Image 1 (cartoon, rainbow, N blue to C red):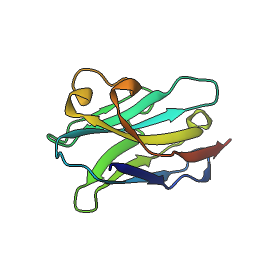
Image 2: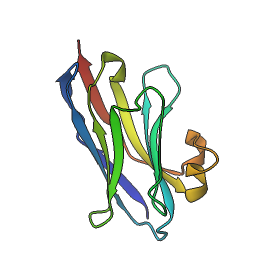
Image 3: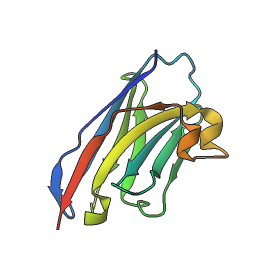
Image 4: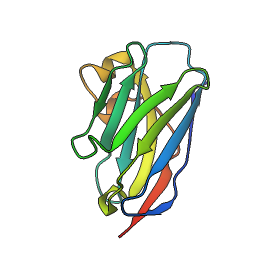
Length: 126
């Protein structure tokens, strides 16, 4: 059974940094698309970043390019999201997700990701 467990959410001032972690277990394939999404109350879930485990290729939403970095420690089965220069508009719940590798190539919509963590809250004070 696949499990994803996020941690690292916290409250930081604008301009600060946080690193989110997501420990994954139960995967049988080494070729998956791992992603970070975020969702504010009343809004649609937004893709933040993806990483394709087979190639290491990454993709970022325009709103976070140059500030956020997605990475994976395969030895620890842990996905990370390093968030720098945080802005008040980055404040929301963040979720890690896993889906088939094709999701990283052709379609990064949330519905393409079958497995989700419970979320971790990021608060940014101005």
